[in-house]
Length: 279
Image (tube, rainbow, N blue to C red; front, side, top):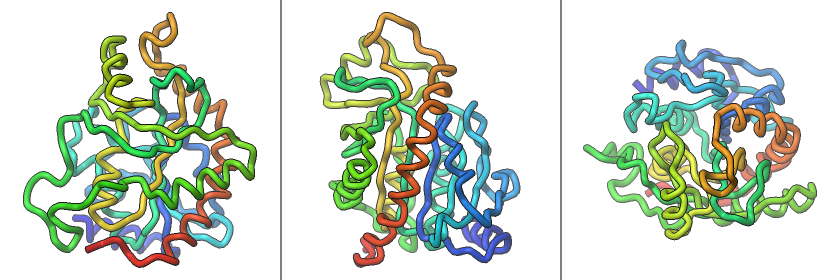
């Protein structure tokens, strides 16, 4: 099915992207920055699961970011929507089959680290998978990647360094931290947030981790960026609602667009200078 999806996307555009960008809740505005773009609804791509969460457009956009061919997933599939791990990672698998070697995963996250503030950007240094599953469970497809992929640097250190350099040049505050992935869709309890803080998490969300595992399995180089759209339960004396997530996404729109436009060409340059990680 991945091969069928690949052929369909290739039939819709002559562009051959080397970088893929996944846009999280309320962060979809970046897709409008691509020129000569082709927008393909997920429903038209063979096997591609729908994105039903509010704030996820559900389209694959392939276009030009300056001179760079790029693919943008405007919305993603989540486990909490009833998807399987293979469905959650399907888009990443298709992009990898199209020749994408660099991936940027963005997400909306709750702030656990008390030093973080709403609207801040956090480059992900590592993750904690608390979703209770792994997309690599089952027979391994050796054509995609190895049976036991290394995850000691799931989020590329060179990519993180480049992200920090670009943020500094643009005077954009950028923190670094560990992302914890929960199943959802209910938000975490204050007790769960205290637990997550104790085990070393700085931000928490309901996505990204399975996608990053699949990307690493295929030898793609990954960068993760969380937008702190709200402070996690118990941090502030107020309830959490999804409208706040979308409001914060709109608030940081221009900053994130500026950051990603400057960042993407540098990441592709880094990948082309290095041999593939795939074994």
